[in-house]
Structures are given as C-alpha cells and as structure tokens.
Amino acid sequence: MNNNITHGLWADTAPAAPSLSSFEGEREADIVIIGGGYTGLSAALHLAEQGTDIVLLEAEHIGFGGAGRNVGLVNAGLWLMPDDVVKIIGKEYGERVIEELGKSPDLVFDLIEKHGIECEAMRKGTLHCADSPGGLKALRQREEQWQKRGAPVRLLSKEESESKIGSKKFHGALLDLRAGTLQPLAYAHGLAHAAKTAGADLFVKSPVIKVEQKDKKWKITTLSGIITAKAVIQACQGYASHGFKDNMKTLIPFNFFQFATKPLPEEIRRSILPEGHGAWDTNLILSSYRIDAAGRLVVGSVGSVDKFGHGLHKNWAKRTINKVFPQINDAQPDYEIEYGWFGRIAMTQNHVPRFHVYADNNISVTSFNGRGIGPGTLFGKLMAEYFLNDSNDNIPLPVSNQKNIITRGVRGIAYEAGARAYHFIQRRV
Ligand SMILES: Cc1cc2nc3c(=O)[nH]c(=O)nc-3n(C[C@H](O)[C@H](O)[C@H](O)COP(=O)(O)OP(=O)(O)OC[C@H]3O[C@@H](n4cnc5c(N)ncnc54)[C@H](O)[C@@H]3O)c2cc1C
Image (tube, rainbow, N blue to C red; front, side, top):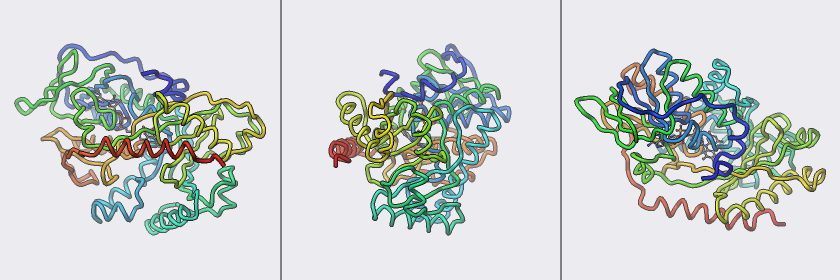
C-alpha cells in the first residue's frame, strides 16, 4: 500500500530506523519476540539490557503497525472510565492496571530521555475536550474518578479550556498532566536503536509463519529461516499477519485517519494548542487534534482514507479545521492539507487489553484499544520481567482465552460506515 496513506507525515519526519536485514538461516536464541512495534521493542530492550539473547522478528519494517501510524498521544490510562475498568476485571486487577497505566507515560518519557530518542516528545499534558453538555458531564465523572485515585487530572472551565485549546467550540476540557505527545514512528525507531545498542538482534522483512513446540523449546519459522528459542513473546496486535492472521478473529478492528496541514504561520500556530497539549473530544465518533514540531495541525477521526473514503474524510477535515480553528482560514484562506493517512485500531469486546498464555513460555499482552504508546511500552517491559523473574505476578491483568468474535467484521464496518455518514453531515452549518 502507498506509504503516503499508511504512515503519512510520520514517515517523512521520523529520523531513520537502524539499518536492519531480514533473517536467513538457522540459529538459537533465549527469547524470540514477534513484532517490531512498541510492545516488541520495549520487551527486546529490557531483556537485552539484562543480557538475554534476543531475536526480534518484524514482518515489514520497524513501526509498520499502529506504532508508525497513530496520533502520538501518550495517555495515562485506558479509554474506559477507571470505575468501569474495575467493574469489568474486578477490583484487584482493575486498580492495579489503572495504577500501572497511569504511570506508563513516566516510563515512556524516561526511556526517551535515557536513550536520547529524538521524537518531538512534549510532556505538557493532554486535553479531553467536551463537545456537548453531555460530554462535559461525562468528563466531570472522569475527573472525580481520577482524583479519588490521586491523579493530577482537572476539569477546566469553558474560558480556561478556550485559551488552552485555542477554540471556542468546546464546553470545557479535562487536563491530564501525566500525559503528553510525541512523533510515534520516531519513538519506535528510537526504541529500535536502543534495543539494538543493548544487544538485541532485530530483523525486518522477516514474517513468522509458524511457531511450534519441540522438546520443551520453541521452533519459530520465518519465510527464510528457523530459530530455536526457550520462549516466545508475541507482539503483533492489530497488524497480526502470516502465522498469526487468526489472532485478528479475536479483535474488533476499525480504522482511524489523520490529515495534516502544511506548517502554519507562527502567529496562527501560537493560537492553537499554544501550550503544546494533545487533544481529542468526547464525541462518540471522536476527533483528535495536535500540532507537530514543524507547526502542522493534525486532525483525525474514524475511517480509512484509501479508495472513496479519501475525498469524504478530507472534506470533513477541512470543515472541522474551519469550524474548530477558524483563525486558520481567516488568516490564510488558501491553506493546504499536506498529508492524509490511516491505520487499524485493535479493539477488544470489553475495551480492556488481554494477557494470553498460549503455552509454557509463549505469551502476549495485546489489544490496547487505541491506546498503545504507554501500554505497549509498559507491557513490553512487564513481559520482559515475566521471563527475567520467572513469574507472572507482575502482569496486572487476568489471563484471557483466545475467543473468536463472530460479529467482529460487521461491528468494525458498521462503526466506520456510521463515521462516514456522520462525517458527511458533521460541521456543515
Ligand atoms: C490510527 C491510530 C491512532 C492511534 N492513536 C493512538 C494514540 O494517540 N495514542 C496511543 O497510545 N495509541 C494510539 N493508537 C494505538 C497504538 O498505535 C497501538 O496500540 C500500538 O501501536 C501497539 O503497539 P504494538 O507494538 O503492540 O503493535 P503494533 O505497533 O501494531 O506492531 C505490531 C507489529 O507486529 C508485526 N507483525 C505482525 N505479524 C507478524 C508476523 N507474523 N511476523 C513478524 N511480525 C509481525 C507488524 O508488522 C507490526 O509492525 C493508535 C492506533 C492507530 C492505528
């Protein structure tokens, strides 16, 4: 598929990934990691730092999946309200996962600093913007639930949010000071450099087609080689391919696109999200808003921009920019949209990530429901510790079964069709 519509702006502005080859031949390793996104790379880095002999196999290139396509919001938790997480997976796991994910931006920004990763990292917080009175009410509940857990989260008045967003369109916004933004593909490339420097062997263009257990070891077969290992970490998420295609049957996939303007003139750029927050709104078909390091406004929402979706969603993006940030069109009526791209989000039925133990020494924590920068980095580290400490006590999730979701395709398609219909009419008046 055309790189412009898969990795778009991020592909053009990320520093290069390390130079890597595909895996060929036969060898042994302590642990094989499958997937070169945040989860796999974080696991590789943390294991290699402790002297474990690691091979990471990526089917395409580093950051090919969600890691190279996302919005770049480093969130501190799941989409769900904290109390709902507790209702779904129980108090013990629920409170633990909320606490761990609340701290996951610390891990991300610490790694960035420690390894000198150039990825436009900015930790000024994020704004969840109320686009209706109902949305504001829901944000009040979120604020209360986070504050009772001691999180630095605060609901801003309409006036305060206006100045922080640079738009009069919203009724208020929830400021989360734990969170931040980064250039997502650049972060993945930086993690790959760090893992390689720590001693992990990383391979690209090396899709895994089969994983079998033989004499208490794992035999991992790629298109052109075989590796024997004591353990396997699967980190394929919503881009599972080749030997893991069936994993997709257990997820509800849907697409999310983004459009980026050309760099805005400095005085306009300073009027939009002037303090460097990333933002999204409370709409069921949500929109995201952020500025990149060069001063481009990046807006996103549900849908894909291949085929006929491109024109419809691009028109929506223009209308959205004009309604939410009219100062751009006022100052520069001929402003241009420079990039448009999309990626696939992996949702679970209950919106909570899953911990799978497929067999002895073959595990995965997966499906971050559109929030994988912090969680992927964190669960990669926790899976590394699972093997280093020989204990699963550190994974703050119950072990899940792999269950196919019969209606998965229909649900994803219905959501995207709803988004197309909504984007066709939204913000016309
Ligand atoms: C459009 C979009 C917007 C998003 N916005 C945000 C956001 O703002 N904030 C946030 O926190 N999260 C966001 N997410 C979610 C986030 O990108 C993902 O949760 C994250 O990328 C998950 O990381 P991962 O390493 O687990 O999986 P991925 O990044 O998807 O990586 C999986 C890798 O596995 C490889 N693979 C698959 N099968 C094989 C095989 N057989 N052999 C070898 N390799 C294989 C794939 O090629 C891929 O590179 C968004 C996602 C999308 C798509």
